[in-house]
Length: 391
Image 1 (cartoon, rainbow, N blue to C red):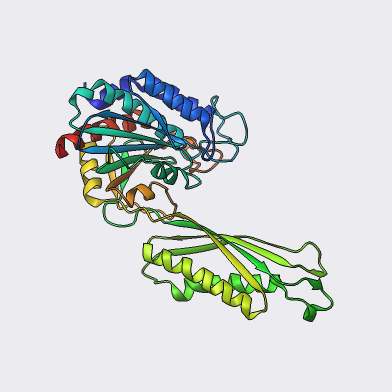
Image 2 (cartoon, rainbow, N blue to C red):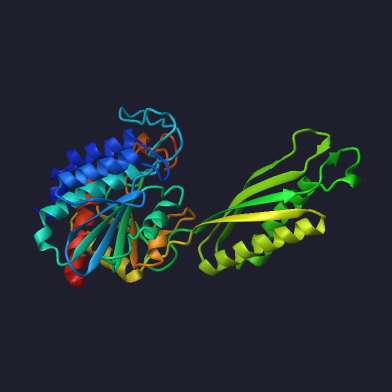
């Protein structure tokens, strides 16, 4: 029985695990139910899990080389309109990005690898992380030692892709940036309030904020290399409470996304310089707070090609490949990829009928559970084969 056949035999259990995460969706860094469930299941499967930061880790095998397998566990703060009988009942959390599938696939992979632990020619290290959606989870677990002893020489993660794409399709990028960076900025403008009838006695923070907003757009139009992709969006602009009163302050909040590390660093520097300069020119002040998110996700081409080669060996029904996929969305596994040669691979989990109409991060999105044995088998087989190759 190969890994895919074994994963099919365990499909009902994987589905049960996935539906537990889905019904009990949790957001952010604090996912106590998910952490407790992962800990309990890994223990049942014969592993010795332990908390690490806000997540869970465990190892199988011994010695070098070491491969890190990662799954995220957090949901999105949004209602669910899937109509599924196992939908999250709170109305405020929804596994609309498929992280429930990722956690369930890695749990089954852990069980399958435990069954074959005697064959492992090295160590598999498991990373169950929270807070991918808020770009805090990988950083939290890195700060708490997930990349320390045993130190991984490579890392692998899968991500499900809903919509119309059929199960069996594997999407990857072994040559360019796969996903964009993301950073959040907050600009607090300080002026001097006054009466709308006497604007010359005031310093208008709304006027300053408007000019800052226009100036930020020019960073993209006139300072960003057109050969690189850079996005800047101001999604929140707030000031004032009455039509005839000039307020004291204004606030702008937004994000930047890039597919290039140097472009990202330049934008972050220029946002501060431009904002402070414009505010000073109009007699006010501006404080810029930049919450650095995650860098662009750039996978290691050799590791990606190696892992995709192992997936081909599984004879998955409907198997097909889509190389060169790229997205302006972001992924906090990029923080691991900065430090460890990494493969990040999308597994299609769509439907050909109306169940595939909604994309991820949509309250109506649905994921095809036929992808679960594909992911569990893929993680297991890639781990066994990679350790064999690099032993």
